Length: 293
Image (cartoon, rainbow, N blue to C red):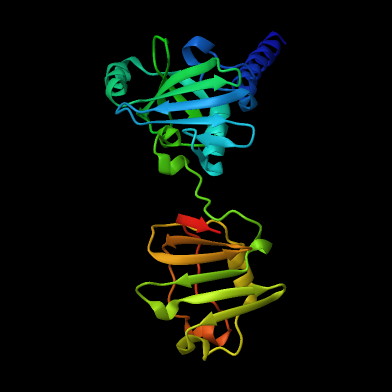
């Protein structure tokens, strides 16, 4: 009977311990000043400042209309959402071991990214340094500003380095939207391929009617164009990659011009047979050259 009670007590303690470590709601076991890497409520964040050891920095601020990067560009939603989720989920697993401590500190002194989090009132909420991947490749070495020792930090269900999420590259943060307007405002899209003009085409909308103009060498093989794909193309407001070809977007009283890459080519036999037209079109990044009225 006594042994049974002892076993039950041991199991209860173990069960409580497992529950505490897996489902605990407190910030961490090591103290916020030493390992407070988690931001519970990102709605309180007003600004994020990230700077690398080489001096490259990016400032992301919340405004009444949108998150802005360096007070100039809208922030890319995917990059912003990823870092906000990371701030709510990252937590210290354990202090860097004594064996690895000297090497980690030495590496972070020359190759670490500093992150400063500010509230909507402008007061600093948190500041920490992001280093490289931990020895076991399942966490990231981080050090709170003013703390005595770095910790291995991890996001649950994610194995790998969190360092890339704290990027200071403007191209990773800047929103890539170029033409941002309601699709119904678009009257005409003209795509001109400089090196392969035969692939150039034009989509014209007149109320509910869609007209597609292309080189006769291609269009003569098609009984009728795929207007569904043309309508999808008209709805594309975010186009990606490097400047190369020319797009003319005609709105109501405005023509916007942009240079861009489009990966495309001749229609395949299957596309011709099934009347899949226009040709292959993919989303790309475009660099606007202006809009005249």
